[in-house]
Amino acid sequence: MKEFKAESKRLLDMMINSIYTHKEIFLREIISNASDAIDKLYFKSLTDTSVGMNKDDFAINITLDKENRTITVADNGIGMNEEDLENNLGTIARSGSLAFKNDNELGEDVDIIGQFGVGFYSAFMVAKKVTVISKAYGSDTAFMWTSKGADGYSIAEAEKDTHGTTITLDIKDNADEENYDEYLTPYKIKALVKKYSDYIRYPIKMDVEHEKLKEGTGVDGKEPEYDKEIVTETLNSQIPIWKKAKNELKDEDYNQFYKDKFHDYTDPLLHVHSKTEGTATYSALLYIPEKAPFDYYSKNYEKGLQLYSSGVMIMEKCADLLPDYFSFVKGLVDSEDLSLNISREMLQHDRQLKIIAKAIEKSIKNELKKLQKNDREKYEKFFEAFGTQIKYGIYESYGMNKTDLQDLLMFKSSNGTATTLEEYVSRMKEEQKYIYFASGSSVSRIESLPQTELVRDKGFEILYLTDHVDEFCLQMIHDYDGKEYKSVSADDLGLETEEEKEEIKKEEEDNKDMFEFLTEKLGGKVKAVKLSQRLKNHPVCITSEGMLSVEMEKVLSAMPDAQGAKAEKVLEINPNHAIFGKLKTLFDTDKDKAGEYADLLYSQALLIEGMPIENPVEFANKLCEIMAQ
Ligand code: ADP
Image (cartoon, rainbow, N blue to C red; front, side, top):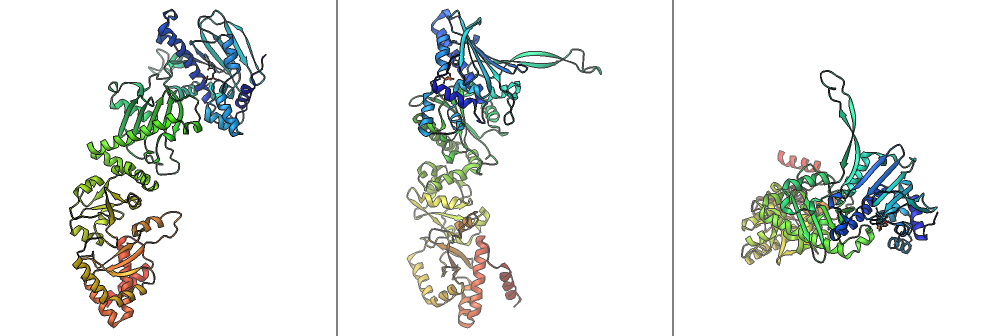
């Protein structure tokens, strides 16, 4: 019996006592070693004809023995001689991971296993004893390495006909907190191979027992009887779809793969398949789903792409590959430049991964632009599902991403169709200074807003903002191509002529006392009561001054942690409407009534905006009183 080297011993201790919840990765690690060993011999065979092996001759075999509680993984790869066994398994040079652990004093094994993967020793998470029988290619003698864990290991000569390595795990007994039995079921093993090792380049085979209907039974009223039959199944598909040439693949292939892999019932809206060489070498297969998953806009949704290193999955959801505003993208990246056992922490700083992430972001953007240009209907579907996320992306970055993202935005507009900002600007009239927008819960509501009258009258197009985040987003973008955004409810629309301005100013001067009185009567609910320059037919409307619009107030107050932010509201009255004359008369004859009218008008303006009124009962009663007069 030999002792493990100190570092190996520590790692091994960690494995044996591990409470790590994803112990199942042991199979991935062992299969990946087997695949590497085959790679080595396969590459040798390419230049050395004496090897006498073809690609098809290579395989990894898994055998389950439920009674004796063993899993055996055998490969016909390059194998190990005595010295290799000693060096490779007695001293595991996981210095990278251990150094990391020392530096950071991670107390828990959980972290290190999750972050690094741990190679061969991970077998000890599920096995009480590990036996490795190996015969190096070209050698006459086989050797056996055994270990029951921390005590040490022994190496002895053994019998083995062919080159390669056979690893047998004596699976631990079931414990309260851990079910090890499941690793002895074909069902679990198949699932693990599918999950982690589907694209290993060599067949992973296992003998599986099937039941076959005995001939002549189960028909003509005879009871069915079954024969047991052993079938050797290949558990992995071997060729990753993303490694195939594009012209070998049909849309159906891509869609089927998407549905299988990402558990969606609906075909994706779009797929992007790319192979890139250069500063980073990788293949990527990306999908944009047609609909947002049910939990997409919840905290539970996790973004990320699957990450493969040369066909071996190393991470189920690599979040660093996607910016938040493209978090809806599904897919995978396979790169030779990444090591199999790279940790989450190390990945975050990995230069290669950063390059890949940047390239992926760019390619998603380009594909979306292409779709927007070439298939508007599909793009609108996309934007319906995920547009909000992109708007959040702009908003949350305080507009820093705007150059990248603003051209992906679509808004409904008074033009009748959904429009991009670029299209809007291209239609702007010569004398038009601003990009106008109006907010509301639906297009029909917005269209009936009194505030839109004047802008529409001038023949200027209005963007209809129906999404909560819209106005916040536009505020962050600030301008498109130098054209600033302007709400139709903003205090200065920049539309009136000097003459009109003069006229209004004079009228306001003449009625200064009345407006001051009405403002006071409304008791701080509005900042001012004013003559409207924008109303044509409607009697009143509410507009706002400052950064926060009425619509934004509505959104903010609907939030769970609403802080009661209020827009600075202005009640505008149409000077050409009969109600204005009435107010003037009342102001002179019956001030109390004038005050009551102001209150009613304010409530009506709130209702038009879709805002709650403070006292609906009082409002209704007063209105009835007037109706009854
Ligand atoms: P890694 O694979 O990251 O180097 P492992 O702990 O998984 O680390 O394995 C240690 C070494 O043992 C491998 O590098 C390889 O040289 C050797 N080894 C493990 N499994 C096999 C195998 N099936 N055939 C040949 N060599 C193997």
